[in-house]
Length: 456
Image 1 (cartoon, helix red, strand yellow):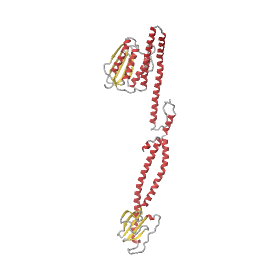
Image 2: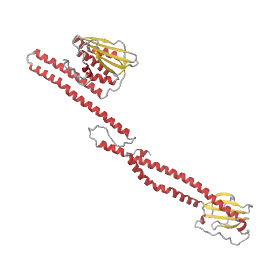
Image 3: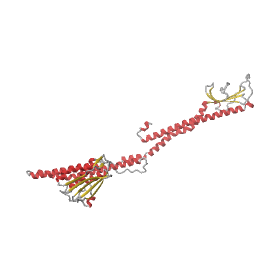
Image 4: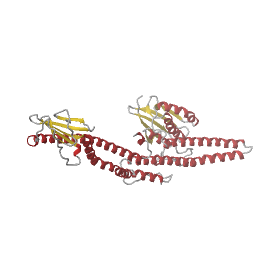
């Protein structure tokens, strides 16, 4: 059985198990048939012996000759009328003298048991089944016997007629089973053929006609895998295209400023100005690469589940502290209201990226001297992060496009990749947060992010 389970061919494994089970059932049926037929046949033949003895006893009055112990007249044996007669023997004693017997019975009583059945070994060294019976007055003793071997021959003949057809049917059953198993596994062969013929870049769903319910989960899982691979490859293609598109501009600007610095000669002011722009271009390219990598990680679902419970207020404090110097450099008033611990189920790094992008956008697109406010509050069931600025704000049409990759408001003088909002919305989707955009009471844009609150 264990060897069958390790056969590499599923078809051979199923056929082997089928034939093994059929053979075991056949053998069990054969044993049960043997035992039952042996018992029934023994009862039947014993009944025949008893009936024959009864007939002999019944004939004692009219047909048995008188014979005494000193009578030396040769005893005439009963005639043999059938080829199987030597397998059956009988003796009839009248008043202790043998008066009738079969040719193979001998003159000594075949059994010491005068009534009922016994199994004895006679002078021919063969096993005999003997039945003894007496007449009504006890002066007649009858023994009827049958060879045990003849019973076994009859039993084997009966079983042969019953079981041999089944034995001959086993090869036919093997062929029929092989055809049935092969036909049953045809959907797997069709699936294998369909997969083997697919091109390496073919990610469309596998479609098979009349898919059995056992194979359907395999096909569904394959199609789900192809869909995930397609999304992953599409994400990689978008990342490559986005990186090539967005890095072209800062790299060109860096090259141009480097050429200006080389051409400045002894003009220290021009060279210093060009080098400052070169550093600014490097910073922009670095920021762009970081944004692209963050968005790529999110879209490949590498951060698809929360990793712990964090405090949004603590995250807001940390991000605001990191951007405080930038706000001072632009003479902007950065206000933080986050005094209450507000726990959520999220990743600390990605939540910091979300808050940083919102706060960076508010500062970047607000003029010098503008007011930027960050507030964190929570209720019994949710946590709210709100970022307000006093910048120019956005029109309803521009707000509708927020979150599209590389979307930037036309006419702005600020540098950026247009990926910040895409990252914000993707992180919010990962952690079941809701993002809404409104006009701010400060005159600019107001962004609210709501998370389900977790126990502290």
